[in-house]
Length: 616
Image (cartoon, rainbow, N blue to C red):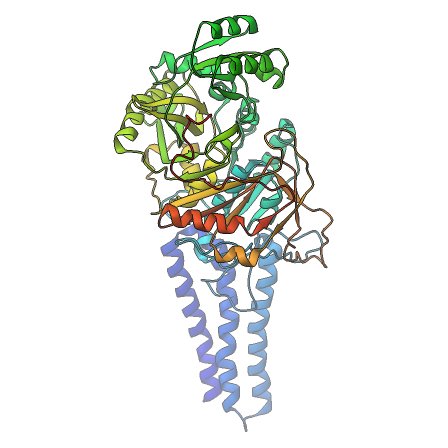
């Protein structure tokens, strides 16, 4: 009787597995069928063995021939499981980075690994240390079934691949935020940096951003056959000003980044000023000059501080806040006559000096002629942040690309935010619509909070750096879903949510920045100590030390000297806390875990008055 019971349990086991998988399929949708089919077969094999082995334990004096037959059924069950595992690996799922741990399948613990190398060796990369688990985001190395599919209401099919174009700290933060999405299995960074090379789920592709054609071809190849909803995000301003978003769209690549006409709002300060005046955006008064002598003559008739801005892109170095006329004249001659900024300084904007505290508001934008006609054009602002532009403590020294940021910016009243919406954001949206822009990306509002309300200093047509490194760690909404909403025109229906608390992100720079500086300095990171602060290191100007070697295809834990400096702004330490003081303590504690020759950083990021513009 016992062997008969064992045989009878086999179809029962198979029926149980079929019902289980069908139930999961009905709950999660038909998109998971390709994953559940191999799961069903493997469960069948494993469960088929259970009644067989139970029966064998009780058959001690039974006919040996019958025992052999029952054992054969168990072997067949194992064969089915093994066969299907091999089929799953070689039939496409392995190519997508999906593998199973061991011979048993646990639906709540499907591991996502990198694509194997051509020799089919498993290349395991340990997720980096230095961060505590984020609520709502599974810790690195453990993923559940939701990692394989998008939410049933999203309309997208997983797993997703995304591309981040750029090599700075902002791009590292964007790649990290995308990799944190449960829908994403891989983030390709072009070209990336030493931080993205070690980031969980990320892979660098070494193509210079300036080579637009190669970048577009690589993006098209990477996303060829990828599920709907996969996309590319352009981080820096230079490729946007070169029309890369237009080229990607023409190649059929879904892209987050404004098209060329809209990108001129950052590529030309003069064009931005014209836009502000035409659409009633509250801003500082200004004059534009193409002749240096005319600019100097205008300065001689004025008095008090003045702001000198190079018209073109200058990597954050094209602004001089001049306390007096002599300083302003030197800046004009430096830009226009000596050509210190090249073509970017041939035209200058002389702007009224505004006294107050600067804040930055990043925002998501989804505006096209089609969405405008449908009443669905939208700009969705983020938390206000505060950048600290001056090199030295107390807002002293030359302007830089940014020495650190905090979010949300303390001391910003609801009245100021309401004035920003009515006097700056809404006129900007009306202008985007009136100009017929195709603007699907991000916009940066550089604001001065004055006694007369907020005034717009500049537009950037992308996320700010280092504000992004402070703001994104506070975003509770899924960043990939936000990027999809930007690209597909559903941003007006998107609801942003934020974590409670504050974020602080001080920046470490090379000695000599923003002037000339040495490169190639080894960066030492005490990762064990870093983990205690719950902070993240976002790399900007550092690359991996290529002298490191691989051991039989297994990527080892990065040594402390695996990074070498390549830029002026090398990295930042980003940490969150219930209060700004707690966030600062953690961020500076984490920065103390990093060292390289010539490392400099401000010690007052986030303190009261540290970003006041009145200090010359």
